[in-house]
Length: 159
Image (cartoon, rainbow, N blue to C red; front, top):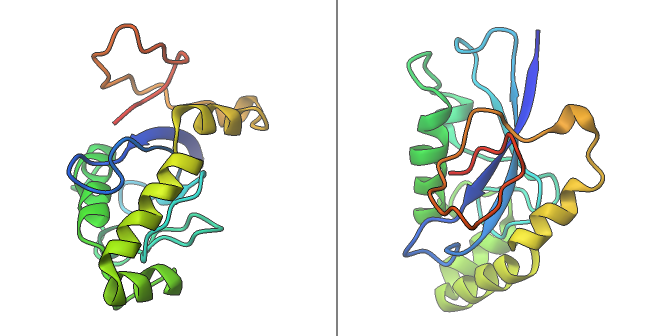
């Protein structure tokens, strides 16, 4: 039985993605944990290894070198933050982002921040929830958010 859920993912500190919140679609195949999950960003992100329109992620650990020892915590607390911190412009899904990062790193950083402000605010993530149906609820794994006055919809996993 295939399982699908969403995770709210926050951009890592000390990166131009800081302050951004993305809704990430996770699909677990029947063979999980022996087969890797499918991960995709729902709201737009500007990054060489993430397709801007589909949200697909090009990450070797998820795509080729997956191990049953990995779990969702590895993906959201290690693999994705590392990907945002250390993009690989030589293996791009977004050629524009890769070229900009290699030729004009400062402009790349500014464009990332512009996308964060435009597409990765908390409001943008919640607006994106309007068209989701009941099967597309946020993960019920729990919340890593200690901020009590930051109201979360029930069943949201935030990392």
